[in-house]
Length: 361
Image (cartoon, rainbow, N blue to C red; front, top):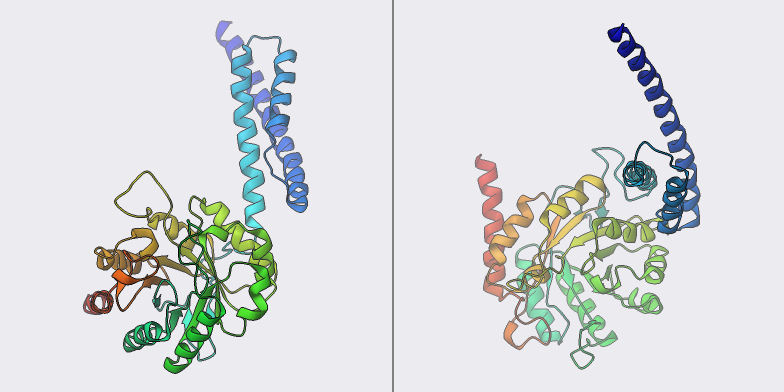
């Protein structure tokens, strides 16, 4: 008799389990509808006040046998699962999200140079434009190694307002003249949407720096123009925040976005930032946009440039950004991380050696 009773009770549990499953599925469908509306409105999916109200209501309605702490713990897990479902559905619909393993955005320049199509591209040049002689000598060295993308920074957002802020439009004029001389493309940082018309006359690729990664007004404005855009990860931005920043540009109509991993700020002081190489690889998996590794701003020092470059290339990234200067100690910004010409050539030799080793393997 007791065994039969146990089987009967277990049967009731099985029935209740199926009822709970159906109720959970029904709840998930309602949550999905709410998530769609939140996405359309552009509001946060998580509402802590709403969660607190639901938990309070459940506590007041609870008549046992489970204590309130158990009920709250169970429902918090349900809330977390629902939130994860909302976020997963929202993420699946963003334009920068990869939808198939072979999907990839390839940036194609006028001469056919491609970024994002298996060839490891180098973006290099001084931290900032300082003079024609400085840019000309640097570009000449870069051109020897086939570099097509030249840094031509004319505006420099600095921590202190008393530090060198860049040459402005005269710097862009110098960069354009030098780039044309050596058949290179200029990448330069834009600080404000009002600069787009003027800078468009000089720049081939716009650059949005780490400090402006979440400047939605600038991102929207850049999305309305057609030139490629380099977007750098913020100082402490999550990968999700980084991808949504890129979404502002792509959803605005410009699909030609390049993501740069430049390290994030941590407690470590031996390097300027902590290069998140794993994060860069997650970007490669989850997004179809090209990913470039910045070995200069992540390290903040030139003595480890070669191993950093090797890591960048071995990771499967689409390219690398490195700062190069004819005389780094007298550079007007970021003097400690810019490479001497001979150091730059050593880095390029190391990368070429990796290609040779791969060919022999």
